Length: 376
Ligand code: ADP
Ligand code: 3PG
Ligand code: MG
Image (cartoon, rainbow, N blue to C red; front, top):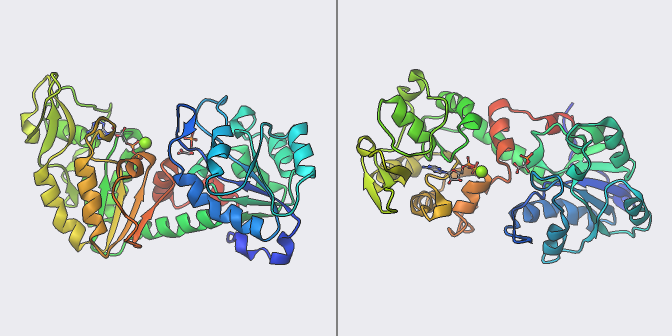
């Protein structure tokens, strides 16, 4: 069975109905304020559509890794783009009272789902309580669809379920990245080697060139017998069939920082014991430029350097090169998108920024996710 979309619900069915929308409003909070609204903005279209057609919209989401974290700052930030009433409750009396009193078009945001331990346990009683708040369930939380939690895989068992606009759009774009048109080019960087290692093999099969960068390339250098000083490394080393694959590319120069904080560009075989690799270098960008210019499809996850410490210039240069092509570019990962926040991508409609990090990686790999399966 295929997934039904939110716009498959007849408009006459929306008016006056309670609709439970699972969004991923897991946005970064700095000093108690939302630092970046990207996920909320991308997810707002579904909420707005339902509200404009007279539905009573109840938004549920998680935030952060600390179950005590609150979505209240998110509700405050949403006021810049829309109306929302925050309820500091999940399925208790405060929520039930507010839900009962809702008027057509009204939007509620409930508290962090992970306040209730039954969420992550995928507890059926919790899913049932959530479902009992509404007539219809709409899942728009692509970025959390790799989590088999109650709000993601449980609710659809109890009330009619649909995919939201963002969910549908993400699936469509990442499906195209799973079967890229040639010539295709993939850039995989950042850290988190454990989550990315299984992907490298798949990308080498599907893409004409795969550039491994960020901290991942330290492991490549080590596998080639080079010393990487104090650079960030992972436990695993990439296998020989990966690093000698004809589609495989690694940096040809790197920016290293010495213990006194000075940065300089070097060849990968020149890293000293007191140095750590913090980014790629200009020759590597020059090597990548023709690949980016000639590709018909580009997939990119992971910054080339430690952008939080200011080593963002080469990541930005790659983004600049991507803005100049007519190529379809799919970019994902919270850090990747944050690292290129200063590059104006708005003039290139071929660039798609995914809200997914782990979800995007897992969907690329498997072509399915628990949250998508639950809607079928
Ligand atoms: P995303 O969130 O986009 O999926 P990751 O979380 O995998 O990306 O990777 C981002 C992290 O990788 C950042 O914290 C960044 O500092 C780190 N990183 C990138 N390049 C390097 C490097 N050369 N050495 C150490 N860390 C790096
Ligand atoms: C994410 O940020 O990748 C999603 O919101 C999922 O969050 P989680 O990794 O805490 O489950
Ligand atoms: Mg990250």
